[in-house]
Amino acid sequence: MIIFSALKEECSEFIRHYDLKRINCKGRFALYSGSGPDLVICGTGPINIAAAVGAILGNGREDQLLLYGTCGSKADIKPDLYHINKLYDMDSGRVFYPDLLIRSDIAEASIISGSRIITEEENFSGDGELYDMEAAFFYEAATFFSMQDKIHIFKCVTDQVNGKLSSREDFIKKADLNARRLFPYIDTLMELEKEEKKEYSDLKEDEIEERLKILLKMSLSMERDMKKIVRYCLLSGININKTTDRLINEGILPAKDRRSGKEIMEKYYRTLC
Image (spheres, rainbow, N blue to C red):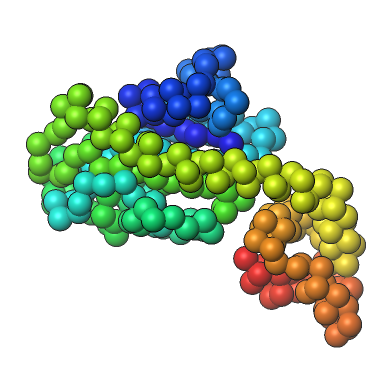
């Protein structure tokens, strides 16, 4: 499992609790590791977070990913820790909905992410309750390497737009307090990773993918998409083989050609996610 944070002041509690040690500097990014999760401190802003995700995940790692950090909020939002359920990229206008397969007692909220600092309520545009400079960009970058259900984003409110900014002492106090609230969630993710490795071997997953590759006459791009669908189904307890067997019995599979295979994948398999 890998935790990403923009600032060391935001994630020091993870370092203490899991006894993490700085092991290397991945370019500009500080990497901590130990017996618990790995931790990456990347710096603030969209470029830093996206570059850190690419640098760490580009070698093929398939970990649970968690972004934790601080943010601002609209004046009527309670300062608290929030599990992000909707992300709005203020720069591109794109909207994303993370898969929240693991529930907790932490409140949910939507967030706007932009490449600049905003200080006035009227500039708090878009569909969101919170504001930061990393969350949406982290999610966009992570989906290039990971399944959506493995991406988890939590933000704690330290400041409010048009409000007084927190002192450094208050900032760290709020970040530490809310980081401690995430220990049970992080422990659950690490246990999930262990169970996943035990229950679903690479061979089993590869066998399913190879079977579908033949039946659907898949192109390389279809293979990449199907790999994500298969992984999602395995993690979610969805019996994808049952769907395949049914389609064979109904004469829908095997596909006649690549074009019909793509249509079948879109109609019967993508809807499983």
